[in-house]
Length: 480
Image (cartoon, rainbow, N blue to C red; front, side, top):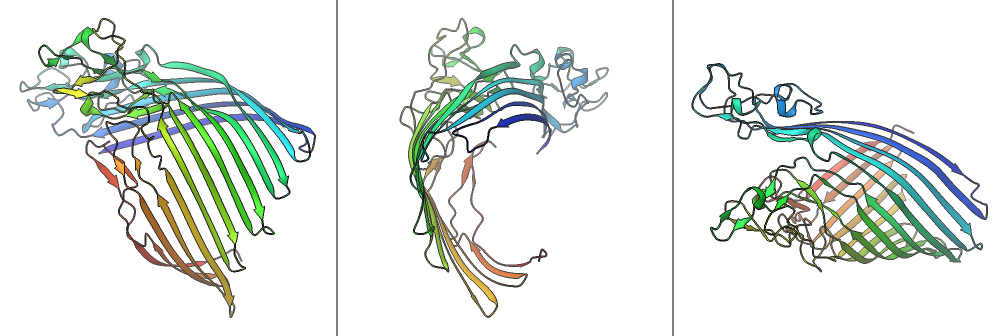
């Protein structure tokens, strides 16, 4: 069981200036400022052994009291009070993100049919994370009881210093990220109801911090078959992760045909995603019991997508969309030994020690592996028929969604195969005046293929869809 409390404080300002859009060269320019703070507290309530008290039980856990713990005396906690006696571990962080930016976009109407758009955005971001995580691991009294100790886990005198990391004392708890991100678009009206375009654009996600820095991957000593310690550890989990970058190349079309009864749009694209941020939760491989985010994988997606909307008759409308994507890993990311003095410093890591040798080679896969949650084929279609008779308005509708098979996660330590599925829904209704009545069926075939799978609770869990649901809905419009 856990309790989570999050407070978001966000202030943003934007100044935007624009010229009349009918000028031959029009422009939009502006300044942007954002100051965002997230105060995040999560407590895991799992203590099954009583807390220590004077004259109390001989075996007990010491209390977690950050205000009276030297290790966390200067930590920027949102709550500095002694924790609930059931709390075995807690996160208490203050995340700050400040961004200053300037942007400009120009539209040049070369002719009545040809328009060139170019824009760029400069950003300067500051990212900081303070506070820490505190745990009762190793903070236990074994079999001797207490006479004068307060029972607070403060250091060796009371058993052991609390497990966890004080980010205020961490070597790196803030960084800046700055640069330009730009785009260029060329659009051409082939005729009044047919437009084609080509786009090049850039994007990114800002970096962030990991919650703990004490975890290491231990080196396996092949001469003894056991783990080594100290300078012969092989990997220190990173304090933070960097921004990742994306570049999109796209050619597309937008059409309105047959006296506006048909819309047919589509695009062909290539997306390059470099140094992607990826999260790992894999205690079984030595990565600790907190999710750690790292950079490393790079992906490329080549795809096509299309959508169609057709008014077949005054009563019948058919809409559909489909896409095909080939999203693959384009590099062979490896964890690199980053412990000075370790025998394999600077070399790829292939295994760690968790009660025995565990493979961590090619955690993110090898070149050519599919990206996570990236089905090759997705499609949907919907048909709706509407008519009126005797002052009543009627309709029936059916829809179908197809999702191809895909991987659940970006790393091999916690990924599962998700099967393809087809989801069908039906509905019919009648309305008169302000009243409506509908008969609905969702998940008609009662499919059970999972939408999501995870091992974040230390076991494989799958999230199936809601089972076949049949219902009747009534409504009244009070607005008329």
